[in-house]
Image (cartoon, rainbow, N blue to C red):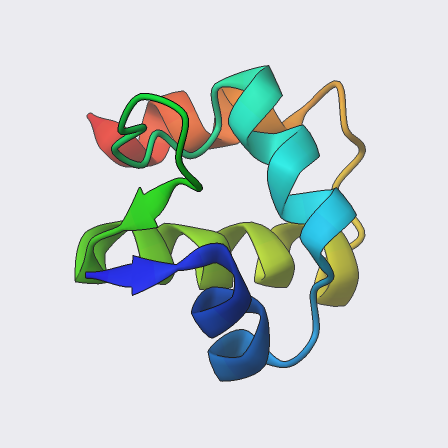
Length: 74
């Protein structure tokens, strides 16, 4: 399990604000212990990397990301 800071360091091409926004949008759903920073599993980290690929490399629009994630999840 990793903290938000760990994920930002590990992925390297995303910042805290962006990951928090993705959590708020429901694109990434890490565990959220009461009054603590989110805790990310390896699957959550992989999803953050996927979203980075979609947003940064493939330039998928924010409005389209939920559709792409939904299709990939199926």
